Amino acid sequence: MVISSCRIEEFTLDPNHKLEISADTVWFDTVFTKVNTSTPKSVNKQIIIRNPQNKSIKTSIQLASGATSHFRLNVDGESGHQFSDVEIFPNDSIFMFLEVHPDANNNSPDFNPLIIRDSILFETNGNEQKVNIIGWGQDAHYIFRDSIERDTTWANDKLPIVVYGYCYVKPGVTLTIEKGMNLHFAPSSWLFVEGRVDIKGDVDAPVLIQGDRLQPMWEERQGQWGGIWINYPSFGSTIEHAIIKNGTVGVYCDTISGNANQPNITIKKTMIRNMSFDGVAGRYSHIVMENSVSAECGRFTFLASFGGKYDVQNCTFYSGTRGGGRNGPTFGFLNVNRNEFNQILGTYPIQFYFVNNIVHGINAEGEIGRDLDETKIGSGSVVDYNLLRSNDAFYFGNGSNNIAIPNFQAFQFLDLDTYNFDLDTLSPAKDKGLLRSPILTDDFLNRSRIGNPDIGAFESQF
Image 1 (cartoon, rainbow, N blue to C red):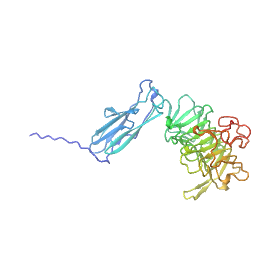
Image 2: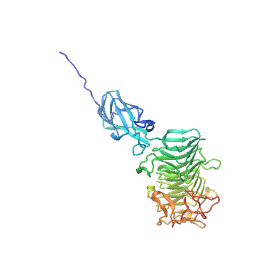
Image 3: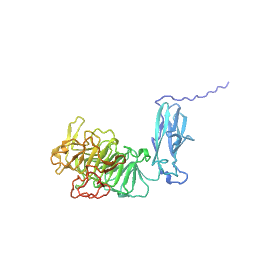
Image 4: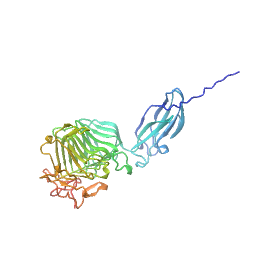
């Protein structure tokens, strides 16, 4: 008699039993569309998938985008985009290989976004695990969590700059960004400045800073990237003729008082719009802002907090229906810090010069707010010659030249739908500004200001 035995393979069905995967994110850091003009080449990435259990396990693997994905998989020697009931023996592993194949002949965002994203989904015993996969899709200069360590100039060579994670300008270093440059930031990515940034657009070729999603549905959507963060010991940065849009915060200055009375940041002839949080925000900082627009933000278009020094003139601040679910004003300045119970935790010195500005929106309670310890307001501080949506008598006392915008009055901008904040023929802002010395001789579009200036960033042409 011959007795033979066969070991029956046992599979674990325990939902607590998961795979061990060698990476949670896989990066393809080559600009693939530049490699070959016909057939795209791809480096090959490898993932090890291990079963740490004492029984065999079955898993299903698929690309989240399915057959339309730019990525290709090979699982244990088999190619495809979806794999069912993949078996892995006890305490054993299998190999997965990945490639990326963007459309090499089309640099359009409809075919290749700037950054190609997908994920690999693993379903094992009813639970799901995920590996993110990311590759560069179009011809561009890509910055992946990197630092600027020496004086650097980005000039228009027809390729955009794409930042993933952060671009950090180190102390003592200047990053110059010339006219016509396009900068794109992936979600949660920032331009973080402890040195100095000098953005030098012009009226015909502004510097454009936005997210990395270029399809029409993303063209004016908030919160797609981080913002520009100015931090200690930075001072002397400038932004002129730029469009900064669709981020979390346009420009944020964090607890820095400048150097030798120099501003941390000077913003001129720039439009900041569609920020999910703030347009321009300073925390004990020195900010100068002229002939600029901050519009349609989820919280403040301008915020001065924890004191500091702020010189804002001939600017336009507006948040309407695109501004999100705001509960407070669009423009705020304060030198009082309160806790959630409205108790004062501290007060700070503040100096401000808010002149010739438009502050408007749809908040029925008013669009300019303050919380001030008046004993710590610096000499020369003034809020005057502004056009304000407010019922606060603080702004309209004896000797004030501020003009109130009644709640029921629609303000005369040329076209809010296209962010054209030029003044219409009936605008009450015309010729009502203060002729200050030294004067601002031109406006947002470099047009001459004649006689008494108009209030806001634009000089009326009517």
